[in-house]
Picture 1 (tube, helix red, strand yellow):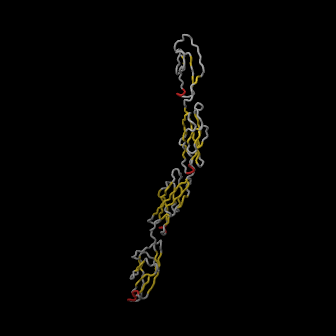
Picture 2: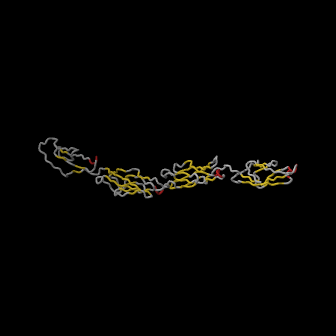
Picture 3: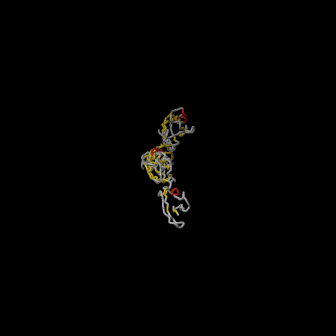
Length: 357
């Protein structure tokens, strides 16, 4: 006899004898009987009361044992029936990711549709109770999706490490039960860098002023460029070629390497180049204005001036104009006149115009 057990199952034996010889008692026999008990009088099989049964479909799905029916109150003839009990699955297991967390690195230039990684969740339950489907809960920022059935995480949006380098994806695994259970996992994605950014100077053009009496080696300006890439791709170096100025390739500090003279040349322009470790470069213009120092003496346009004055010339009459110049500019180049040595005080000179009266 075979029986499929749900909760209570009655086993019935008959005996054609009468009286004491027809008094049947039941008991179980077999190594797999221990989760169950049988009423010795009624033959009803049930799960044991103590200790409580530990039925688990995922561990043991089927049990086989025997029911023994004995007459004469257990001392007479015996008959045996085979019992097979199937443990019906209950949705008692939560899907579990293996591993529960995963770390992945992917290049920032990965195209849409690129498969980043695959996750896997298991559910030991049976049939629909153990069928797992996947979903993305949070953290993808519109950049990643997960395959509902295959657990493959794919790129669905343009990636840029300089905008966002790390993503923490909260993912879900849901079983197929009518009352489903849900398990959770985490996938941490780090974007690796490619050299997709040129180094950029902080200013579009630099205009600086330096005094013409600055000694060789004087500081002019510090040029700063930045590259948002990472590692070697963000390492930058500066270069330029000019007879009067030089740049530190590492710091961007520009200094003089030759003497300056505003009266010879009052302005310079040159180009500075910056290059990153991946070969991308950009340039910037530097304009230098040379400021004046009072390093030139005024000089007369003629070494000697001579004129004749008519007798009885009225007082205040201009009799001679003296002209002097100074190569400096502004106040440094403004000339004032005075008579340094005179035998008498018959003449004077206008300090601004050089008119002798």
